[in-house]
Length: 338
Ligand code: TXA
Ligand code: MG
Image (cartoon, rainbow, N blue to C red; front, side, top):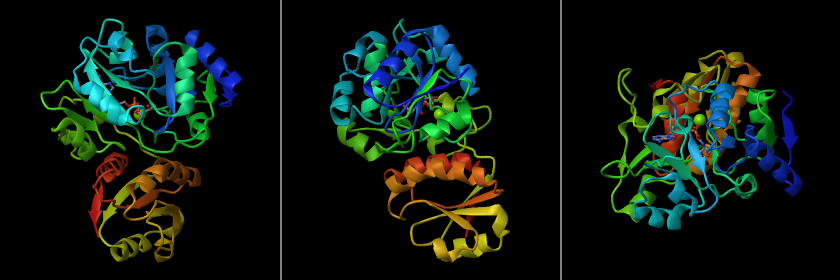
């Protein structure tokens, strides 16, 4: 299959909408990461997403909407707090898990009786949903297990020839996937951290829990609240290590490794401390900047063919929780104190 490269100009957005209506797969930009979209109400189309990504069948997808009124048809019950959450965070990088309606095909919910819904803020994503005239199921547009794509080039690297089209909307602003919040637990629970932080959710909800799998490692036989949390994730081919400690401790550790086979993700201003190549990872106190660089850095390291990636361990404060969550998975929980 030849993968069409579409721009985000109006005629191309219309083409993307037509392809989606016909049941084709189209990668679309969102403010978080690129998504691999299909008509969420067309089970056969959604099944092709799993095939293109090599995604395990039991990992459910997020349904993307452009208008709040679309929630009603997709869900069995809308709790009153949804309006408050929508007022505060939609459109934007928050996904909410609700009881699903019969309209949701099994391919989307992967057999669960819930559905994850998000209203993206990216103008191209919203235009494409409207052009398609249907809600869009979309996981991140990467090969399953790889770092999520934050540019159209990342998408093509993984999926060229496997999908009908990609819409190039430039690099994603946030850089890590949306916060996933379940409203189906007794107390609302963060299943995956993102730009919308637990503190911000608490402000609106008055109560919120963070699932233990966010920073902990799930036992092999444990049942994940969010199936995506049990898979190896965000992993470049090189081995990732998180080094927790001072810049000096980091530099000493990294400089003892073979420089040609190593790359370091250092905070701004620390580039000269290490001998190996470095990639920009934002300022120490700036988790939003770190999130923006993270997946691009991991992919760049693989392009260079290095064997080991050492990363300055970020703080878990605020949006840092999302950065740390992704890094722990990329590193398969290898954290070294330095
Ligand atoms: O920012 C994002 O959320 C991006 C863009 C494209 O919108 N999408 C994304 O999708 O990251 P994906 O499939 O890579 O991650 C969806 C996560 C998975 O961890 C999945 O297990 C969880 O959401 N999820 C989906 N439906 C769920 C449900 N009904 N209950 C619990 N978790 C669910
Ligand atoms: Mg993903």
